[in-house]
Image (cartoon, rainbow, N blue to C red; front, side, top):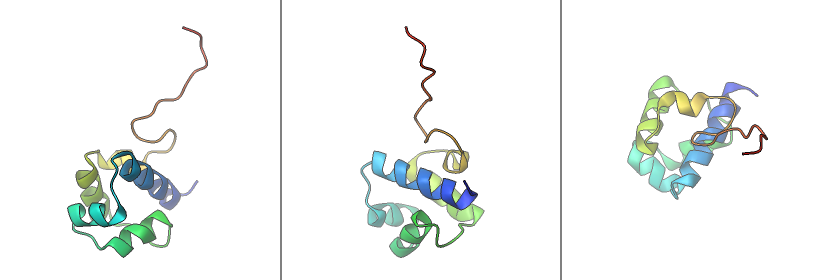
Length: 82
């Protein structure tokens, strides 16, 4: 998975988990709504500054938006019985 796809996936998941529309996230981050849409569709590559603005608006660390693996706030189940 390329880094644009990782950002798009994590951005969408974080936004939806918080119940935010693209428009509301854009307003909070000071970014145009169509740009948020383009990021979530992997049309554009975000600058590091934009990643920072989005992370702040979502209440996560910028690294959370770029992390491969389970989406931010979710853990991987090991399958072990408790």
